[in-house]
Structures are given as structure tokens and as C-alpha cells.
Length: 574
Image 1 (cartoon, rainbow, N blue to C red):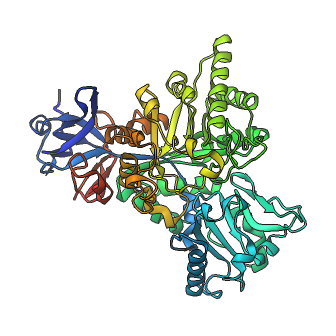
Image 2: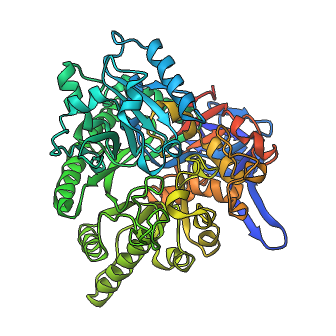
């Protein structure tokens, strides 16, 4: 029998294989010393001596001299096309007051005159600067009135138009709900029915009236030149796969298909067909099947339907178990886009099709409705003697009632958590709606993990201005410390700028597992990637610093020296 030989041997490293947990010793990382790679796969993982047994004359041998090697990382929920659409946006510096914000907008508008930027689109402002009444168009008019203008808020679920933009959108007569990727945009109106300039859930596609009036079109986001900088930035940090928060049409699927066919993608892309509402289910399935047939490649797949269950806590349109604090009547429980009976039907339909579900849900009532619907659908399948074949992922899950936390592991639900939010990136805008006591319990997944629930990690970034936050080491540090690296909470109100609850900090092992094994499993890539072991694809990232030894507050500084995708170096390594 011919001896197997390696094409590449990486020796004298610290190959991360996972972590052991114990009440007496805490969390202990497990390492191998070396890996032998044959073609696109790991041939053997063990000691340097064991791996060197696979060496032949043509084998390339690299001495890592103790460097840490992680499995290739996976971003469980982000928005590459939405980000690509923002390549032309202007960015405004963070502001702590309305006056500072207006001055910043004025300066940025002067730096990008009308001739250069006929539609002034900038980001972002903090929602808490304006409270539940939101910003007004007349205020924006004071600093920019020579062209239509839109300022996006930090959450990317609301925006602020000036008067000229409102006129061009053609919504003053009250008839205009404008389509957006998340459903219908809501234009807030005053007591006379006049649009105030504040809009909720208005995606970039809501602005066609402005484009038409100007006779101008922005990038669609499906140009290679628009999306590649973001994809390259992910791969540069060792991210070798992503789940799209929702795939923005067949042009987006075709883009990733074509990149992979040309050998330029060098990562996994998992898409999701957006279901706008309950009545839209069959259309979303048809689109998914068409895209599967036309745009599937070895690395590009789609087998998920995306559903928006509620809105955001910061806008007060999430689905709450308690009345919102800003409602004196105590009757406003927020908003839900799909009720339990309908969601149960959706899960049963998707299960018959063997199509997975990915749900945007942020507040506790939305979370409970999702769990109830999964439980009911699974029970119906058991009664009919049918298998439960689909994965259900609940994304964000910012506020979960304690009684529902154990249901994640029990029902086999996956959680997708945006790690870099853990420090309070969105500030305190949700306090007005949820109250301080509930706000203090948000973003806590420790009980779910302790019960054996699977929590994957993601970035959920929407624009190039915040693309730096897709850096996985930025997210890891933030979830380990509960302190935002760029926008820390006021230390006078929050000791050490730590976002409550302080005991909700996640461990390094939990976060690495979320970026690797848990995401690979949920994205149905577990046979290919998610760990460093023989038989799996040789996806790995070599770090420039020991993530297990450096101070936690320096983890965001890590910059990989080499990244491998399926046995080929896509950064360094030569």
C-alpha cells in the first residue's frame, strides 16, 4: 500500500482544537502541535513528529515557532450587499448632542458638495438624541437644504430625511408606504398627517423616488468592485465563510456564483430568501428553489428562508411581554410581524420542503412566540410520524425571558448573537421603551450556553462605515469585556463602562466555538469546516499574537499573518 504524503506540513504551532470546561479549573484550551495537509484537506493533526512522517521531497514544511492557529472563522449573519450599497455614503463623526450632530453633518456636507454627491446620504446618528418623537426634517434643513438628504441612525432600522427628500419621495398625501428589504417603510407623521422626516425600516430601496427625481442611480451593491473590499477585509482577518442576513435578489446570488466560478470568492457563502410576510412564504420558496438551480456552486448555497418577527428595541417596535414604559395607558406591547399560529404553519411548510429558517427576533415576546411555534410544529410532526428536518435560528435575541432560556437546547434551536453589540453599541435608546431594569438584563446568553444551547457568533454590519466591527477579534474582545472598544458607555453611570449585566461576559472558548463549530453546524458546513481535524477542509488562520495569553483588552489588535482556505494560502503563508 502506497504511503500517504502531505503537500504542506505546519509544525511547532499551537493548533486550537477546542476547550475543556470544569468547575474547578475553568476553561482550558486544547492544542495540537502540527498539521499535515494533503490537497485541500487536513491529512493528520498531532505532534510535529507524527506529521513529519507524511513528508516527501516535494512537501512544503513551515515552522510556526509557536504561533497560534485557529480553524477558519465563519460570520453567522452579515449583509455583504447592503454594505456594498453604502460604498458611496458619507460618514459623520459620533456626536453626544444635537448641536454637535448638526455641526458634523454641516461639515461633512461641505466636504461633499452637491456636484459630487447629488443625494447626500450619511450615517449615522444615535437614536437616543431624539427620543421616541424622532428627528424632524426642519432641523436637518438648517444644515443641508441644497439637495435631498438622508441621515441613517446607528441601528440601521431608522433614518432622517430633509424636506427636499420628503418632497421627492412623494409621500405627503399620506399614500406612500415605500417597499424596503424588511417590508414596508413607515414614515412618521405629525398630528396634521405631515411626514416629520423620520422613517422606520426604510431600506436603500425606499429611495427610488429620489433617484428618479435626480435622474441618478447609486451603486446597486452587486458590482464586484463594491462588494469585494468587504469580502477581502473578512478574509484578511481569517473569516472564510458567511451567512447572508438575507440575499438581496438573484443579482446578488449571481454575483457570488460568478465570483466562485472564476476562483475569486475563496470563502463559503450561505444565502437566505427573504419572506416579507406570511402571505409571501410561497414566493420566497420559489425564489429559493430557482436560485438553488441557477446559482449553486461548490461554495455558494442557499437553503434558508429569512423572516422578520419584530422590529428593534431602540425604536420601540419590538414584540414585548410587558407594556412599553413610554405608554401611560400600559397597552402598547410593541409590534409583531407574524403571530404564533402563522409561524407554526411556516415551520411545518418549510419542514416539508427541508428548508431552514432564520428569524430576526429581538424582544422577549417575539422570542417566546418563536419557541412556541417550533414546539408546536415539532409536536405535530411527531404525531404524524414525520421527521423534524430543519434548523431554526433565532438571530439577535437581545432580551429573553428567563423561563424561555432552557428551551433553546430542549428544542434544538440555534441562537445567532452579534458579539460586538455586547458593549452597548446602540447606547441606551431602548431604555425609554423597555425600562432600565429590563435593559440591564439584555444580551445575556450564559444560561443558554450552560444548558448546552448552541450560540453562533456574527457581525451583522450594514455599511462600510461600521465594517471594521466585522473584525472577529473586535467582537470577541467586546463580548468578553462588555465594553465597546470605540463607543464605551459613560463610566460615571456604568462602572468601568461595562454594559450590564456584568456576569453576562462570554469566555474566549465560547466565542471561538461560536465562530467555528456552532456556525459550521448551523450553516450545514460541519462536514467541511468548523474544526481542525483530519478529513475536513484545510481552513485555518495563523495569528500574529497568542489570543490565549495576551491581555483581553488587546485582542482587537490581532492581525493574522496567514489565512488558508481549502489548502490554499489566501493571505501570507508563502
